[in-house]
Length: 149
Image 1 (tube, rainbow, N blue to C red):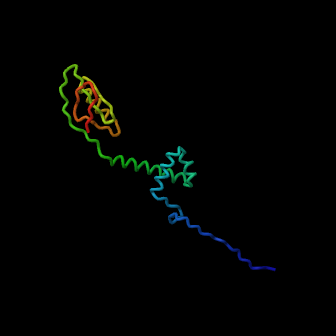
Image 2: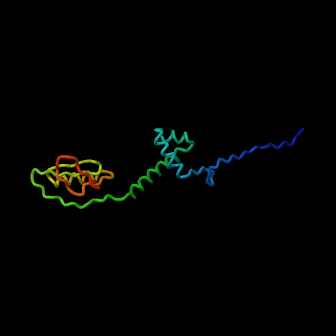
Image 3: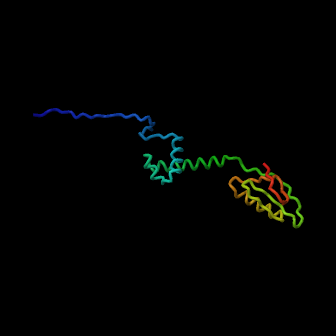
């Protein structure tokens, strides 16, 4: 005896609230991406291990990390430029010292004003956010170094 049996298929649609593109890939909001990149940084795990733990493809996660690095670079470029104050370098008599205090607390001292100027400029230029604090050259004297700015 032949029966005409029709197989039945049970389909279940589960709505998780995640947005998906037209190919069905999850769309992760930018804020969540930033959270995940920061969480990976704090976890100490490799990018691959962290991506696997979070259920994200490694190449997708790696591209998020690159985007975050580029965004940090853009924000650093948008930071205000360093401002320098024009100063008069006094004529220094032999034996009289000159002192310059930099923003990071570095103090440059010497008897040759030109040499001190060159060293202070090199240090300020090499610092990420270094800028001169002293608005003028200060004669070397005993006691705490005054701060300006």
